[in-house]
Image (cartoon, rainbow, N blue to C red):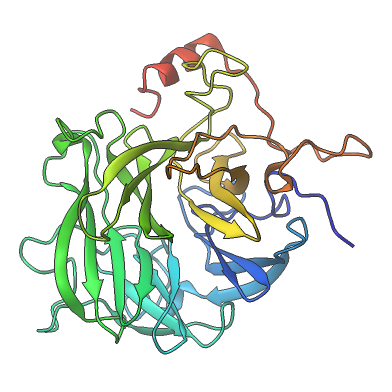
Length: 361
């Protein structure tokens, strides 16, 4: 029996932010980091996976732990956290999980024969001479990998850029060979950080973190969290490693810029960092993102909204809702849990700070 889809779409006790959704076979799988209820830092848990039938997006199944923190040779005692991962299917048909630990600047890779089985450590992304990406002189720190495989090449996008840090240039794209580890083309910068945004067309929405990549037709969509943190933006190009042009905001987890039911500069929910991506499920497209709960930054839950990709390739910003994957209003009958994501207006000081883009400073 089909279930009505809510936001957040997973059970109230589960905290899976940084969601990367993919359709494999007849199910949609969501990979993300793993927060805890009342956690005191980001990403405290092992990687777990959830999936749902493509024709029943309210009926999510727990796939269990797919990769424990201690599986990485750099983290045998589990003292480091597993930050936001991404998954891609390699040319050999296996599933490759890319991630970065919280206290090192290299990209780790695990592999599995199935989308949600037991992933095994595979290696580190490295140059031909064996130097790991992130450790070569001139490399910028690696963070939040997003990956896309085409043929025998895999494109990996990484980086994090904070205000005032001129040592961080922007989002990087690196090309890997068929072994999913060895660098074929060294990193190049594809989207600027805020310290290098002047004159680029990205002003005010420069890259902060949360790289994700999708291809729609012949167009590459780079989805990322902007320097404002609460919004997921996108840039497009016909080439995966150059010429990206700013497109706009896909979603804000405090609904800034939405003016259909309030002033555009008024937020309607507490907002903080954001991470997610787009996916086509059946005939429809969706944006997966996360919201914050429990009056903390460290207990984030996944949400999703239906979106439109217009004939010209643009994506109008979507409004955050309680129905999300349902694609329409709640049924209006029966009982609903209190944790559903509703827009609650903030006190004036918070509205003012978010409108000025300084709430996170």
